[in-house]
Image 1 (cartoon, chains in turn blue, orange, green, purple):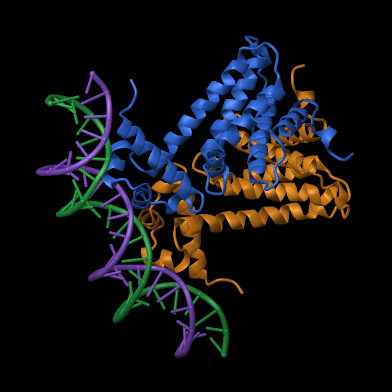
Image 2 (cartoon, chains in turn blue, green, red, brown; image 1 turned 90 degrees about the vertical axis):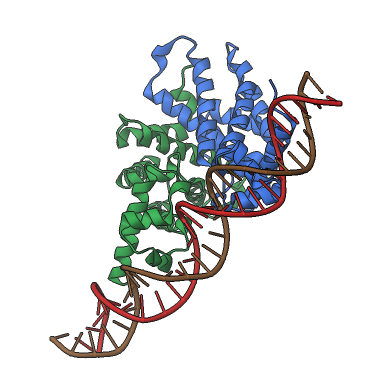
Amino acid sequence: MKQDRRTRRTKKLLTEAFIELLSDKKLNEITIKDLCEKADINRGTFYLHYQDIYALKQQIQTDLYEELANLINPFTKVKTINSYELFYTLFTFTTKNEALFQAFLGPNGDISFLTDLKTLFKDYYLSILLQGDTRNTTQNLEYAYDFISAGFTGLVSSWLESENPTSIEEMARLTSRMVFDGLPALLPE
Amino acid sequence: MKQDRRTRRTKKLLTEAFIELLSDKKLNEITIKDLCEKADINRGTFYLHYQDIYALKQQIQTDLYEELANLINPFTKVKTINSYELFYTLFTFTTKNEALFQAFLGPNGDISFLTDLKTLFKDYYLSILLQGDTRNTTQNLEYAYDFISAGFTGLVSSWLESENPTSIEEMARLTSRMVFDGLPALLPE
DNA sequence: ACAAAAATAGACAAAATGTTCATTAATATA
DNA sequence: TATATTAATGAACATTTTGTCTATTTTTGT
């Protein structure tokens, strides 16, 4: 049961205006009034759908997160980890949603977006590695995946910022090497 | 040329009230009115020192950042990297400022705090490794340190969140191993 | 074509913001 | 310790944003 077309239109316009505003304004500087003017939507209409700016932001974030979760899901069905494929898929997804990722990971971004991303990532890894075998859930392993998933998100955000970005293939390979061959292989001795 | 005692008092009270509020309120929910009531400071006085809530936050962040930079600085004078010592110092610092770190790294935290932290960290590593020798500044090396510094900050934030936290010594050792022995050593084969 | 639902304009009270000013209190320092 | 200086206060005020509400118009699904 799909939403009314008008509703979809309204939400789309508000979302687009929001992302546009977020690129040169801090979150706290974006007022509902501003947003509605930019989207050319009646202010009352905004309240028909969202409680406040942060609810809108949360919604956008949740949608993106869901899409990403669906993307990762097939990888969990598999017995062995194919990191390259996974990273390739992830980097591809970020370019497809570049504006959003830049907004959420950029200086006006949201720390909870990062946290969610990290959680998603970590859960995926743990779910594969531990297939039913929970005795391996050591504290150290947890920390290792905290490190990896944070590292990965950090990589994505600096990759998105670079003006002459490395290719998706290369990024996937590089990330894969960092995680599985280890960092020392990449560092000067 | 130190500030007037009254000014110091005002800023201190506002800072304390802010951190207290941040522990159970989202940043956007904290109003200047709230804050001043909690700090028992005249609202007009707030405007004597800060433009808005975000300026206050930025100030607190900058102060903390500066303190941290001073802490890291001695390590850059050294020829060889002693990661354990560095990490030990850093983890100790975070526990000393636990409330602040939790506030800034927690769900109501600020992404730019994370970014600053990462930058500080990465610059430190690069400055040591490249002592004058800039030909090693490859893109891959940059990415490796993006990964490491993001990973480290991720580790700190999940460490601060855990209700039964690992000791500082153990965390320093663990982090050091991740970076220099590589992650595979910690993962199940 | 028509009933249902959504968006609109515009009005409104309530709240927070940001500024001002005369007055009081605290401070540095001579 | 007296005094000039500076900071904080209380209180008022206009401005802006928020949030809610209506009657009306427009768009939609069927």
